[in-house]
Amino acid sequence: MKFQFRTLKKILTAGLAVVFSAALLTGCGGDQAAGGGGKTFLNIGTGGTAGTYYPIGGAIAEILNNKIEGMNASAQSTGATVANINMLKDGSVDMAIVQNDITYYAVNGTEMFTDKKVDNLKGIASLYPETCQFVTLDSTGIKTIADLKGKKVAVGAAGSGAEANARQILEAYGITYDDIDEQYLSFGEGASALKDGNVDAAFLTAGFPTAAVQDISSQNKIRLLPVDSAKADELIAKYPFYTKTTIPAGTYQGFDEDVATISVMAMLVVNDKVNDKLGYDITKAIFSNLDRIQAAHAVGKMISKENAEKGMSLDMNAGAKKFFDEK
Image (cartoon, rainbow, N blue to C red; front, side, top):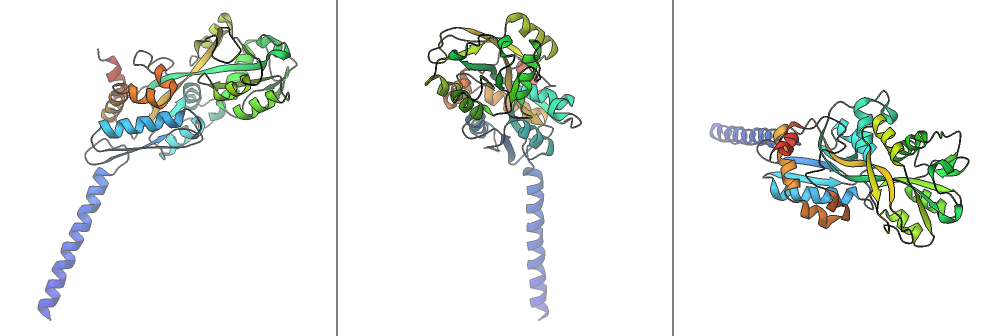
C-alpha cells in the first residue's frame, strides 16, 4: 500500500511539472505580438468583406506568416477605421488598416475622439490614397462645390471619417450645413439616393475607381466636382493629413475629364504590443513582397516604399522608421 502511494505521488508530481512547464511556455511564446521566441500571434483589423481593407489585410497576413518565423497573423473583418482604432486601444487587434485623418483625430483627441484620446498607437506605413469624391449627375447642372449651396447633399454616415472630410471641404468653400440640406448617408446609401434623385450630390472617401461610383456611372452620366488647387492648399495647411490627388479622365464611364481633388491616406498602424524589432520585421516583410498585395487588389499598385511616409499623421514605430531610413 505504501509502495502504491509513493508511486502515485511521483506520477502526480511529474504531471504537475509538465502542466507547469506548458504554462510557462504558453506565457513566454503565446503572448500576442510579443516579437520574442515561440509563436507570435498578430490580429489585423481590416474592414467589411466587400471593401478594400479586407483583401489587403489578408494579403499582409499571408506575407507575415510566410516571411516571419513563428508568426501566426490573421486578418479579421471589422467596422473599418474608427472601430479599428478602438480595437487597437483595447488590444483586441494588434495592427490595423486605418485612415490617416481619423488616426490624427484619435491621437489628438478631436472630432469623434474628443475626450477619448488614444495614446498607444504607432505608424508602420502609409499605403495608398483614399480620395475625396463629390459626385453628382450631369443632369443637375452642378459643376463646382460652390454650386452645392441650397442643395440636398449626402455627406457620409454620421460620425464617420467621410462626413468629417465633407464638412472640412465644404468649410473651405465657405459652406456650412446651414447652407445645404445635409443627408447622413453611407457610400452605398448615398449612391442609391443619387440614382433615385433623392439627393443632388453624394460625397465619399475611397480609393478610385470606387465601385459605388462605377455603379452610378454605368446607368447615368455623372460629374465629379473638383477641389481647386488654392482650396486644397488651405485644407492641407489646416489639416496636414490631406494630400493633393488627380482622378484621371476616364476613371468612370462617360466622364472624360481629369479632376483635381484631395485624398487622405490608408495606413498601417500598430499598438504598443508591437515592439521595435517586430515593427522592423513586419515592415521589411511587407515592402519586400508588394507583388502579393498587388495581386490582392488594384490599389496595391499604389503602395510603395517611396510614399510610405506620405501623410503620416502620428509617430512611427521605431523599427518601421529604421527600415525606411535604410538605403
